[in-house]
Length: 342
Image 1 (spheres, rainbow, N blue to C red):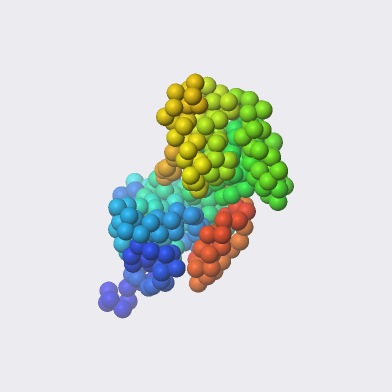
Image 2: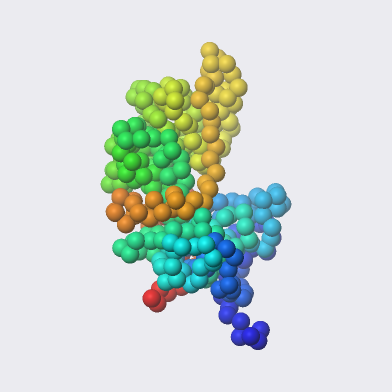
C-alpha cells in the first residue's frame, strides 16, 4: 500500500513535559488490524479525562522518569471493536466496549483509534450508552478496587469527597455490594450524593467532618480519601473511625502543610503520643478485565451509572481540561471523539 493510502487518524500529542495546553492535534498512521496476541483495536467514540492526564506531564522534567515523550494523553474510552488479536475469545469485532489505557505508555485515549491489551477492555451490555461508558475506566476502577476487596454486604464505608468522579462511582459500587455509605460533600452536592444512594451525608461546609466521624465511632470497614487535605486530620483520627481490621485508602487529592503534619504524626509517633495503628494505604489503579466486566454488568443492570458533568467535542479538548482544572465538576467530563455511525 502506498504511503498516501495508509489509513490515518487524529490524536492529541504532547511532545515534551509542560502544561497540558502545549498538546497539539496531529494526524498519524492508524494502527494496523494485524494485532499482537491478546490485543484489541478499538474505534474510540467517547473518551474521558482525569486529573492525572495533566498532572503527570506538568511535573516537568520529573515526568521523564515515568513517561517517554511524545505521548498521547487520556486513559478512559468507549467505542467499537475493529479487530482482535489471537487469544481474545469473548470480545468480537463490532462489539461496544469500555476500557482504560495504561497512563505510563505512549498511547492514550484522546485518539480516534487505540490498541489495548485485553486487561484494559470489557464488552458493554447493549443498553449502556457510550457516553456512560467512555468516562468510567479510571474513576470506576479506582472506586471498585478501593472498596470491593475490603467491604462486604452490611459493612459501613466512608467516602471523603462523594461528589467527584471517583466518589460518585464509589457511592454506587458500595451500595451495589450492600454497604451502608457515609460521604462528605458540599451543601450544593448533597442532593446528588443522596440520589446516588448515600445513606448519610456530612456537609463539610457546615460540619467538622472529623469530629462527626469520631462521634459516629470506629464502625467503618473502609475510608476512601479522594480529597487529601480536607479534613487534614482524617488519617490521624482513623483509629477512632475505622474498625481494627479496617483500611484507609488514599486515592489522591491535595497535600497541605497541615495535612503533612498530621500524617507524619500518625505514621511516626507512638500511639500514646498520637500515632495511628492503621496503615496509610496509597492506591494505584490497575487494569483488570474482570473488574471492568463487573462494572459493565452493574451498568447494564442500572446499579452503576456515570454522572456526566459536561461534554466537549474533539476540537474542544483544551476547554475540557480548563474546566477539569477548576475542580468543581460534579461527576465526569467526556469528550466526543468521533461520531457513532453504527
